[in-house]
Image (spheres, rainbow, N blue to C red):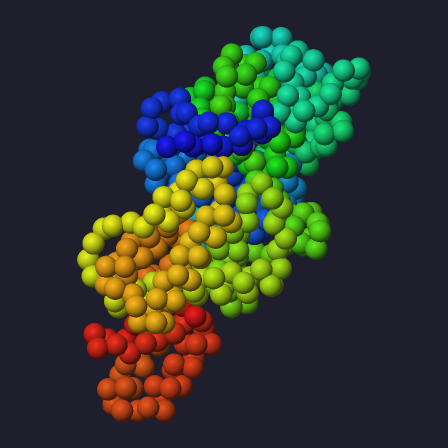
Length: 458
Ligand code: AMP
Ligand code: ZN
């Protein structure tokens, strides 16, 4: 199968051939746990989920590592603002992140390394960089990377460094592409850091954010691995600096393919905590959206296009999720056994392995849904065709994960369905109808079939 991914490093689609046959190693930059992650962050985490699911579906064993940034400028500031310890802040938001991942049915990574467990390895990498002449210490006990010392600096972000006079250096983790500067590998302790510090050969301090990912990626995946992902805002300075540090310290090729998802935007602006225009998963669920609709809304655009988030987008997603689920349940009633796949399934996969073109693949799927619905409406769908349709929907759902199967139904919904079944047995039609209405309000449809009541999302 010809798999192609767009590599940010070369700005072109490339044939994908993993380093080890049959296995793919992926590092994805995880959350900075100083606040609840927003749906912009989850757009990126979902693009990575789709990438991983496709690779698995076509037969690769995937080793996926996602770090947790539990020490950086933002986490320390939050702990200070709330007069809490760093661990209190980061454990709370890590737990919430894990809940949201599960809610969006994002497959968990094989490893979730946390930065504060890897400080010694970071000190080793920084020492190597000093030894190799790529880094220098300052009088106050900080260590900086010298961008002049690394000839490929600026390649990923396509910076033109000619004529750059390197007179400044930057301590904060985030800064813009317009100001490429020597950046901090180790930050000497300052009063605002409170009790957050580790001993090092340069004195008390803490690592820079970029160093964290250089160390954790190579510790878990080796010095040379297949794919590194993040959102486009990670290209500079985070990933540019990661490349400089890892390649200079380890004398390695580091990463073969860099993949970045475009931003989710709200009213023309990037969704971000600093702009305050964020929506979280619990907020949207409380507004009555299902996790499948959220998932669909976030994966239905191409990962390299901006995704404009709106209520209309969510309403459309809800309708699409309903159409697929409705057909799925109709097919279950008609189908007999069989494992034949329709030709459309091959198209669906071919489109996805061509740089994850989810909107085009969904187009194929929905044309197919339309075709089958037409046949069902005309009473022309055979048992065999229904089973082929079911196979397609089940396989597509390994990637999309938007089907509500009977065993995915939440406990409160199961309870309402059971109450309704009892009401029907007692011929209490009024209560039964009221419960049907209540289920409808919660986004569920019930159907009374000879083998019992079935329930699926509206
Ligand atoms: P953070 O928790 O800020 O470190 O971000 C986690 C991930 O979310 C990173 O890969 C970011 O690039 C990504 N990200 C942040 N904001 C957005 C957004 N509005 N749309 C898509 N991805 C984003
Ligand atoms: Zn990172």
